[in-house]
Structure formats: C-alpha cells, structure tokens
Amino acid sequence: MKRIYIQEAPLDPGAILEDNVSPADGSDLLFCGRVRNNSRGRNVQHIDYQVYPEMAVKEMERIAEEAIEKWRINRCVIVHRYGRVMPGESSIIILVSTPHRDESYTASRYIIDEIKKRVPVWKKELYDDGSEWIGDRN
Amino acid sequence: MKITIKLFASIRDICGFEEKEMTLPDSSTVDELINILELEHRKLAGKRSSILIAVNEEYSTEGRILNNRDVVALFPPVSGG
Image (cartoon, rainbow over all chains, first blue to last red):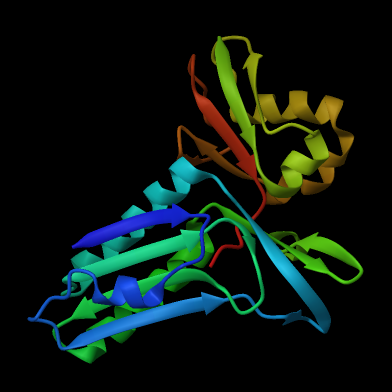
C-alpha cells in the first residue's frame, strides 16, 4: 500500500498509523517532522510552506517507488503539509511498514533525505523581527 | 511558440508574479528564457547560479530546448520536510 499526498490541514499521525495495518509487518516506523519554535538563535512564529503541487507529489511518488524497490516495504505513506504550520505542529509524516525493523529504519531515512534534496517545497520562516526563505541561505 | 512559466519562493518574490504565458521564438532554450526575465528583473542575476529548473514537472537544465506549450518552473534550492 502506497499513499502520497499533500494537505493544508493539520496531520493526524494516529489515523495514518492505524489505516490499512498489515499483519505481516513487525515494524511500523512513523517519522514526524515538526516545526521548531527557534532557528539559528531566532524565535520562529510560524513557517509558511510553499509547494509546487503537481511536481511535489510526482517527486515524492518517485522517491517512494525507489524505496519500495530497494527494501521490502508493505506500507509507505508520505504526507507533506503546505500553507502555515505553527511551532509544535507536524509538517511531514512518513510511515514505513516492513516485516523487520532494520529495513524500516533504513528506508525511512532514505525517504526523508531524498525529500529534502528533491521535492519542490520551500519554507519561509517568520521571526519576531522579519522573515526568510530557508533554501536561500545556501 | 507559447510556454507557461511558473515561479516559486524567492524567485517569485523578485519577479512579482506566480505564473504567466510567454511567447518565445521557436526552439528557444531555458537559458534564453531566463535571459529575457533577467532584463526585466535585474535582481534575478544574483540568483542565477542557484536557480533550479523543471520542464513539464521534471528537473531539467538551462540548455533544454523548449517546445510549444511546455510548462517551465524556476525556483531556488528546495527546503521541504
């Protein structure tokens, strides 16, 4: 089972974790990326995520396919938020279910690393004293 | 030929639009398209070396020759997750 999508509403990790559970899998690994209230010494009020929807979903699908080819994954769910995300809220959830834990740890790490390199999403952090597009620091 | 251009994040801020249709000579490249944008938006020059390009939702390069109705997206390095 593979489900890849983006949404503006807050994410519900419990619902994602319990949807379509596979009794053949001994390992469900759920990664939640959260917005921090601080970044390089500045207070973060919120992050606005801008996304290129069609391409972002396509690229996340491709990354999931790559992971499914490399490891024995029975469930793969990737959900990325867009719009305004407040500190403490999740911006991304990755669920990987495999028969044994080693594969889910490796696959989950691969998926988040590739998303950060390739998926067309940009965050703009808003501070007490201004704002900044994050990719632009590089 | 006509193409659609889409801009994101800081590139959108510099150029002041999200999306528009442009008419270009046949067989124009992405490089030539960026040159045209740069004439109107000088600040783009400072971003030039880091701009990422997608044509029809797939990553591409400056040398890519465009076809009628292509959708070209220009954006800075991504920062999702």
